[in-house]
Length: 60
Image (cartoon, rainbow, N blue to C red):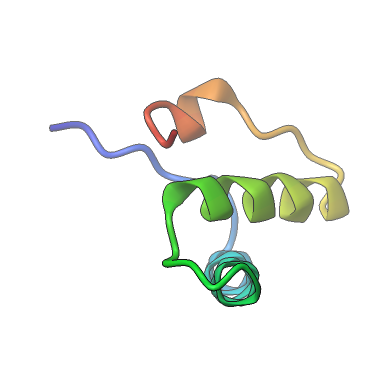
């Protein structure tokens, strides 16, 4: 099984995971890849980078 990886630093990945947890909690839902994707998109915008299809293939 091939694992897709985000091409960002560990601190950014931590931020993505934490913010996805906040989004899910706000929606009274479990953390899913849907929330991870929404937050990853936001994080990449802050970094002025493009999130590639390869990085998130199969997430949702």
